[in-house]
Length: 461
Image (cartoon, rainbow, N blue to C red):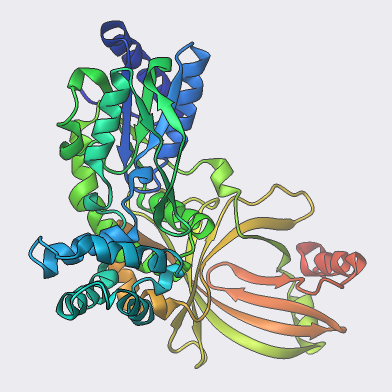
């Protein structure tokens, strides 16, 4: 019987109960944690390991990410399959030449025409020209379709072999993979199965039939970790920005073009093999993380007299029309602490809008002085939108396919003002009102306090 769970501690203890049952009968136990990319599999594995060790069970974690074949092998295997009918001559020789070149090339330039030219030059005396021509043509084609979330990216047979060795009390070499160079790296570390009771294996495809069917069902407990459309997207984009060399716009493009389809087609179906389904949404600590923290000190203008005074005594330096689209998962409730916003700007006074940036706003810090200090993750900066999407219609179509909906749309007119020598921002926000932001860091607190009093209802005459 499959169990569904929404709380981490309950999920941990459900696993502990099942693990102890397996240990009583088998002596050792594997825990397989599968699920969507960035659903929190690694986080769950670490917490479960702590609980197991607190209860006296020595455990280790193995990530199937470490069994990633690497971009050189992935592309070469695809070329062999699709351009050589599964039998590529001189494959080993080409791989030896291509690997160091691709490894030392920035991610966005791997198997680019320039990279392939270097491979051609290095391999031309080792490989017949016709074979090399076909290989280069195939690489230039397949790199455009690269998807790290496909099952063929991982050596699942090797995962099963190592896990069976450990369950039998044997030793294996711990595999290692670098997300910076997108290739496996050498390792001399070992895992000794005789010294451990529980082996936690986490990864996208650990519950897939090709891996599950190589194991004894009595040896393991199976978990599938889920998340909402928004939490899965944000975790993946924010994580990759920190640990890979890929530009964010590339990751976003790949997410909607490949990752969503892979999840629906090949990862989600493996949930049928799970004992426990864990619904893991973004934690508050995740919502407090950001690339930068933005401080906003603003006041709502409700005093008509002060509004007139402000406009009469200010100089307008610029006016910008904005439209903000807020996105959420189709099964999520609106959450002020977790906002995903597409900003559009208009150059014709609000008649037409063009996408400009995509940002995530997390949970603000609690302040009693009226200031809002909020973590921000900039996912797409101005000028990068068209590197990820063709246009607004392409964006909306793809996010809808990924399980998002447009929760609300807000239009704004923002005026940059010069008021008594200080820079202020006046925002007229649709259905919300007028707000004055103190954007000048040099404005004295006394002036801010005076404006607050005048702008509020206390200033009405």
